[in-house]
Image (cartoon, rainbow, N blue to C red; front, side, top):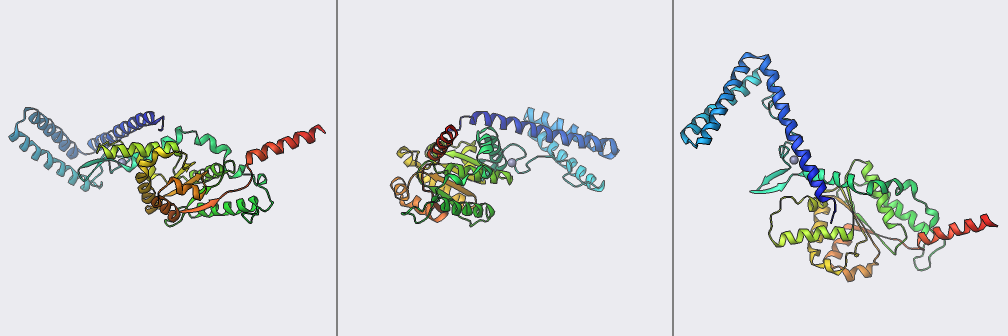
Length: 346
Ligand SMILES: [Zn+2]
């Protein structure tokens, strides 16, 4: 579970409150400006204010006759004011509050088919704040293409693979660059890095994240355990038919420009029950042209034992599988350091 979720949601609520306040303030400022400019406008505004007061009084008293009467007066005055606005050379919606998001009027929620849903702007803000508060920002200072060192990959041909780990990495990096160049193309395949630990799969995923963030796009990076926690949560909500409107966390996985799932398979068997949610998320992201990057320590044969043929089918259709092999880079680094020290001593 994203541990800072509560904090993020509190921040979001504060931001929306401030946005609504600013929007109302902008409306008031414009009214005051026109009020000073035109006597006729000022008169209508005064009348609107009075009708508004009478209307709320009638509402308090639950006097239906009076409510109908003053609603009508109120509406007529508003149309009059709009007409006057146009005559004065302003757009008819000039006095609408300046909402950051017109769709939800800065509430963060919209009503769709009689049910309340999270507005896209709120999910977007959630993703941005998640990134701001994650460690990713720090990590990407060291894990990016400028720090990639291919010297750790052997140039000796691997007999089984028919290629050296070095050449293989060069090829993989070409594929990664292609992926980044075509990032906005809807039919571009996603990337799945597989192979044993210590070959730089997560590092490559971080490099991709850095490039995508630098393009001004949003990224969520989750290890597979945290990722499946969100899916489990979504699954139990669906099961209970529990209409939780604040579903930003799952929605963010649907809507983020790049989703990275690190160490797929590590979530274990107890996440199996939400594989259906996983599958539908993969579908939704692929169909809407959103990109996903997966790393896994499993071999292809290993993946088949964890996931159903349906999910394997999706992975094969939506992803380009890139195989990393060779000696653990961390071991090589340690060896090189040892050699360096030995030569320094002699
Ligand atoms: Zn909105």
